[in-house]
Image (cartoon, rainbow, N blue to C red; front, side, top):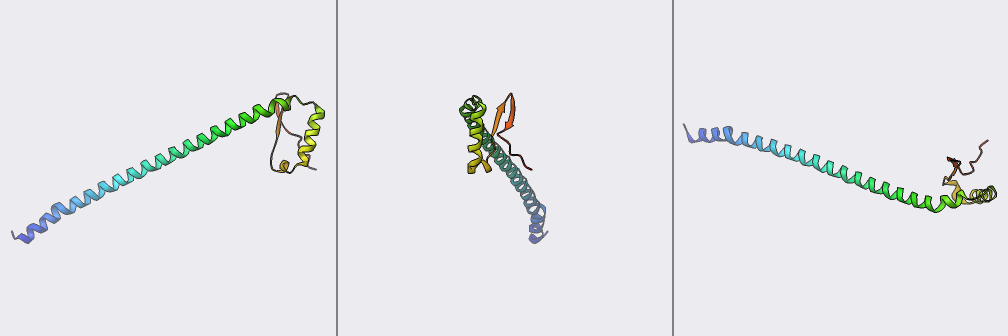
Length: 114
């Protein structure tokens, strides 16, 4: 057998299959690594969402503790004065306000639309 045929047999029998196997393994490793990065990114995003949710809940609880008790002790005249000043303010167009009356959540003086 000539040396050229031996080199050709070595390349065709060993080198090409080795390159194909190495390429396939690197492709599998790359896909696995991408999946891990996606999972880590999703976990990080969910943790951020959960943290922001907890911050929002604690802020709402804080605001509820500050405002709920004083507003629940208002009589009807004080509520009507508050209602009129609320509707006169510019913020009332962009912010909804609710009051707990008799165990039910009611919109603060709902506007009647004709």
